[in-house]
Length: 627
Image (cartoon, rainbow, N blue to C red; front, side, top):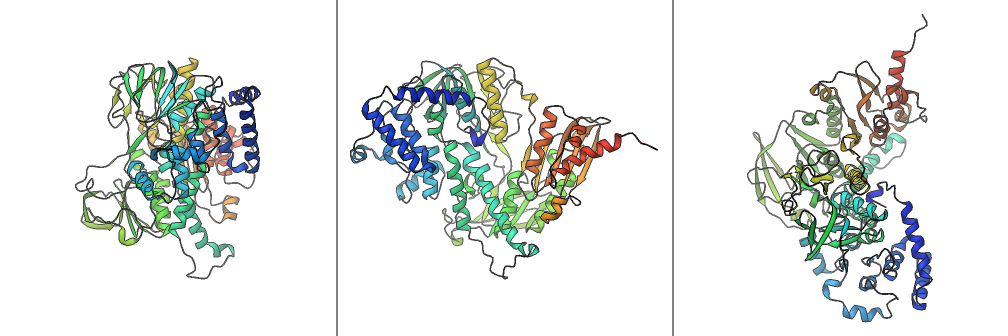
């Protein structure tokens, strides 16, 4: 599996590789065969924990043709962490192994105060409960050992272990290349650890609150005053969900694909070498996938204040009474609605006069979403920004009770706004510092990222490619990073010429209702680009599925080149807009016109018919008349 189920078209090579390993089993020692049978028995006994079998299997047969290194331990079996890359039999006595372990070799373990401090201080992850221990043992194991003997030269090295690094390194290895990945912080990057995954888990809990409050509409009566939000349980579920997805991005899975994994800081030392943990690795091609980080505005008092970003938000254990959010983008809106539904008083500071204005988003969509979020309790201060942040009380740093929260005052125009949690969601900057890009002759711009051509190559070093949030001028989305990684593997190793300009990239805000866009998504964007367009709009107020679901709010707008059926983009506001937008993306990618969408049979009843009816409108406008 590549990052969060991103499609890997090279999966057939995995089965071939597995077949080779199974064949080699017959040439192993008697001890090795017995151990292998024990592993299979354990896997059958507990199919939900077959990771353990896979990890030990890799260790046992690491001397095979692919030279897989030992995978890090599973939380359920600390003893596997001590298996040497060359070990060919099962450990005889785990007690002996444990006695020989150094403190640093111990895996992450829930309830250990020293390890909890280390996880919080060094990795920014807390609390160290059973779920975060599972997470960290997958994405940043304490007992991890780098590849023993690196290849003399790698076909591809990825610096970074987010979506871009994972997909590029794993896919290249699965297709037979000598591949390495350098992971400094948490494998899975922002998406798994502090972005897509935890935010969607939190959003689901918030949506449950809204559903319970509206249950009486559907004949489910809950006595007034009996609805209670257990925020601690909400966050425990978030951590559990994240830990369940972590193995897809963990070091063990990456090594299992055939990639050499190095845990440390990677820096270029020349145009074709990278240094990590004192080892210099030579490459034919290199992928820089170092991601991005939150942008912190230059506001007096802000940098000294105990503000929060998405990197700390999902560690909360108590619900902040009041939250102020700087910014009105996707992260800001998703978290504003969620925390308001969970019980916080939320204020959003939007520098623009309406939502999505700065990026030319659809005016109707922005106004509709703001009105709906306001109904959920979110307060918007539009055309406003903070001029000063004052820290009244620093507070504790564990959020174990409301008394531990800090207190901050923000000056917003002539108003003073107080909050216990100040969430800064004011954009992203590229991570391009301290990577040695200058030594690799890679052109970049601080904050914006690496400058690449249409093949994702560095404009100054054709053997170095950029992927994801560290690249200038590309959408900062997980699925964009994954697609760029596949493009880079094809171009760098297969000599192809897949182009960034050919990619059609949808984007979704997972509010309720969702807000999804693709391409030229509004008349305003088209006007700025000097393109004349026609707009076809269908509302959900008459959609039968929306009526039965009890939520008839939303619409689909499809933008086409004027006088034609050529689709340029779309905006959808609906409960499942993120699912619906993919049909439009597919049509644009394959040059299918609006007529084709209108003629495509859609299941009834579905909100997806909203997209279809835009096509039906086009057809009706162009059908011959009989009078």
